[in-house]
Image (cartoon, protein in one colour):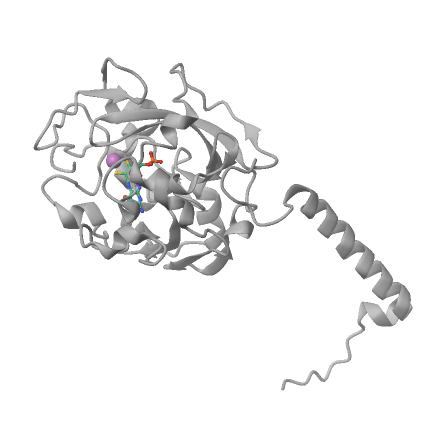
Length: 310
Ligand SMILES: Nc1nc2c(c(=O)[nH]1)N[C@H]1C(S)=C(S)[C@@H](COP(=O)(O)O)O[C@H]1N2
Ligand SMILES: [Mo]
């Protein structure tokens, strides 16, 4: 027990006791009611996310229909084909859910996901996402820049990379019973990539809470990189000094590099990356450098040989 010698005057001694308690109770109730009006309870898949503002992140491309976005998924924790996740990920309980933000930061914190999503205003941003396999989609994601979170935890001078780690729980993620990948799924970005204003911490799409198969309750979306960099169902965000080895790099280092920038000029060892097929469309279209975000991100890689750092 710690004793304080200096007498402090508590507000309860100034205001008559009952009044103080009543006022405090009233204020708590009012604040609670305001928050409750917006956030009635634990959010679940398909519920509308309140207070989402539109931003100028729009594209000339047509949106990929919700049905395609939610029924053609890569999520190996639920199986290796595209159709299984939408059928089986429904069983993933996404509440309660915590995200530990840790490592080289001044202010590490264990966030409840419902607090995390209130950290900054939610925005709708329309981004392209291109899978390394050659398909792509255009999605109205809902979230806020990852930088908003990073600023609040105050990375130390040693923080050079940010690692994202998915839940490991074979009971809730049956695909983890297979050794097809080294679980849990891990991905990472350089700190400046993670801080880039395009990098989004995502809680929803099409105005609604993320379908489980798209990475509920929280994932990242890094629109200028191949889809595998955008880790789903994250439980840990770790700041580190050394470049982490990502799951796909560990599995097949010759095919999946750390950078994984969308680049039509660098072929995958087994296929061309020059073109892509938009989900729901028949004809392929040319793939754009950095997935169309070159103007915003090319400077991050100035002077780097992108064939070497693929
Ligand atoms: N945890 C985890 N995250 C993941 C994957 C995965 O298998 N597990 N697949 C990645 C790949 S290869 C792609 S293309 C995108 C697909 O995201 P989507 O299903 O929302 O389209 O998620 C990425 N994030
Ligand atoms: Mo992918």
